[in-house]
Amino acid sequence: MDPVAVADIILQGIVSNPEALRIERRDDPDAIRLGVQVDPDDVGKVIGKQGRTINAIRTVLRAAGAKQREPIYLDLLND
Image (tube, rainbow, N blue to C red; front, side):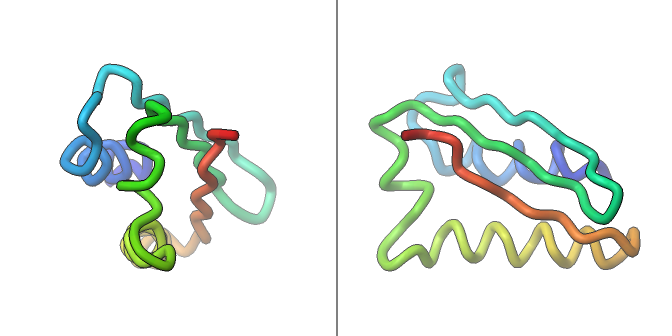
């Protein structure tokens, strides 16, 4: 499954404003990097307490990448 689609499905269920969700994919030689931008009001929800939510999302994406034998990294691009 496409990592952008996986991230989109997960994040759509978390954010209050799904229209503001943007995911950009960058293919590096050694990995796939996903940059995520959400509504400023949703940043706290995506990060979660002590970063637990975003770390859980990264774990799921890592598992999806392991199946394709390519690491996947997720970065939150909001300032």
